[in-house]
Image 1 (cartoon, rainbow, N blue to C red):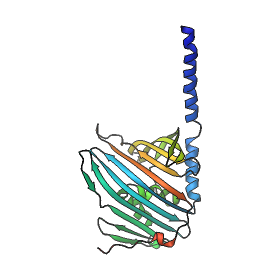
Image 2: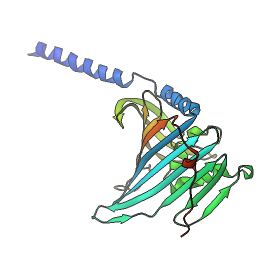
Image 3: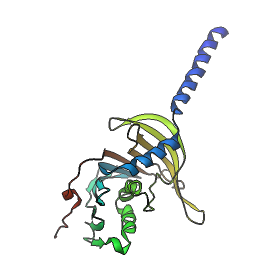
Image 4: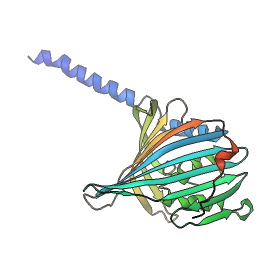
Length: 254
């Protein structure tokens, strides 16, 4: 009886070892370095995607799209709220609508909620702050990918704040094989104080090294039984052919 169990135990141990080897078949930091290089090397970029914000009792759904060319320096980001869906069955449509567009280095922004239309000339030096400030209203979208496209702008996305990153195997997202990375999102004040600490999962294309998906779990310190989770899913195109018209936006008159 006992001898028959030994091979089974050995098989189980071997299988566990094989699984661990598969999960550790790549270096997470190497994948992140290649991701940064991939975005820096792009001459143009386009994407569309969704943001799912899960909160206690309700879920916010939003969509976005992005266009970018390095030369000339053009950028277009459009974020739209879809709806807030409550567990009790109510669905409240959202009127959130934020647009940022830049032609030849001149940035403009518009908010559907406030109807505010702002212009940020390159010489004024406030363009980066405008993109950062829009991060809250766009659920992080104005910074998430642009922070990797504009490497010298000093913008930081949750991926920049990811620490203790490790390999967690592969997973298919948007029909593409992706590296799945686990880590801890941790923002630090100059004083050393930490904030926004939470688990983060990043899915990066195993061929193009562009980001397909990001999951941010409930921050540490939240009250028990309360949640605040964000899932961002991105469908992208590397170096697409884009036209000048895709970087223009006509502000509504009413």
